[in-house]
Length: 171
Image 1 (cartoon, helix red, strand yellow):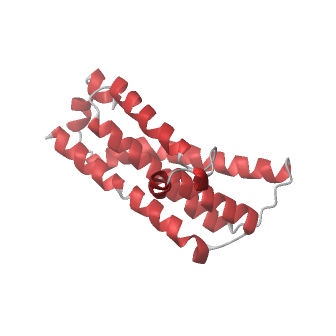
Image 2 (tube, helix red, strand yellow; image 1 turned 60 degrees about the horizontal axis):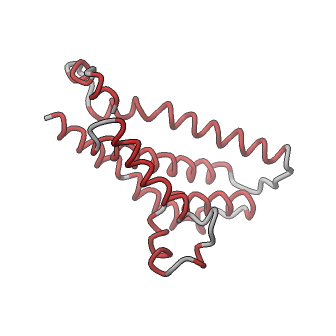
């Protein structure tokens, strides 16, 4: 967190705000921007590129929300582990690039070594790509996508870890 470097974290800690509220205040704007971008891209894809929208909007909203929460949780855990912004940027670089590479977006997962194929199940980007493709192009629902939604929910549970780590680092 930048507040730790600048010195404003101590000022925040003397307010009656709880660690969860501080984390939520940092996450809500990014969550809202992420949802807005998905809506704009989906609308643009449907209107401009004539992409068929066969999805149940609520399934797409649930999947997108869980994906955003899981990636925000990963970012918050990284920020609670690192002491400076430079450490957080470096850690993020070495964490996010493999997630993209292992997602199946650029390289087929079936062509990866077996060990890496198993690692892709821990990748929130892979889960989100499956949800987006299945909902937008095939129109499938929760009964098919529950494994990906469950995996994203598990990764999003890292939010609790981030809050606990933040609370412990302040004591």
